[in-house]
Length: 156
Image 1 (cartoon, helix red, strand yellow):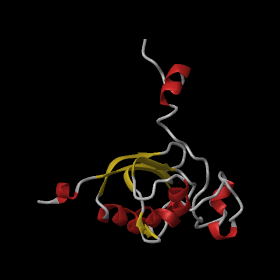
Image 2 (cartoon, rainbow, N blue to C red; image 1 turned 120 degrees about the vertical axis):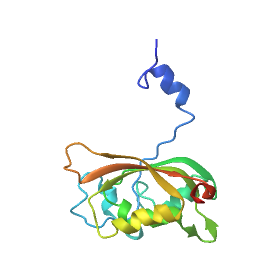
Image 3 (tube, helix red, strand yellow; image 1 turned 90 degrees about the vertical axis):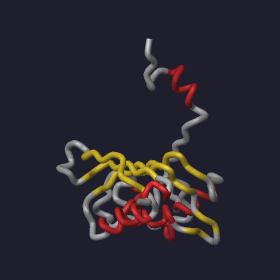
């Protein structure tokens, strides 16, 4: 019979291959907007002693991902994506951030930086591979998947 992800044998086979880190990122546009994840409401500079909240730079350093390729980066931070997306592509203290090969992100709302968000992905060689509205949000929340492609893909 086909195995399902919820079955213990399959979970045990994957346990060494999948890593989930449950901490918040960045600062949000609006404290009121974020009622689900309390860590997303806080600014990293005001929250240095809280182990449940890290900057992207701290995460890269702590996990030993400095300069490495990450196959899948998934983030659903209840609105903080708009404040921190540019950090996903920046150089930090003289080293290149990890290369994110696939980014899965849940977008919340449509703020003024929406065009910058999509332009940043495009300028860094990503294409949209999937988009899906989240049911029950009246289109306010969308799941996107971006794939990083070789620069030669974009040559004519």
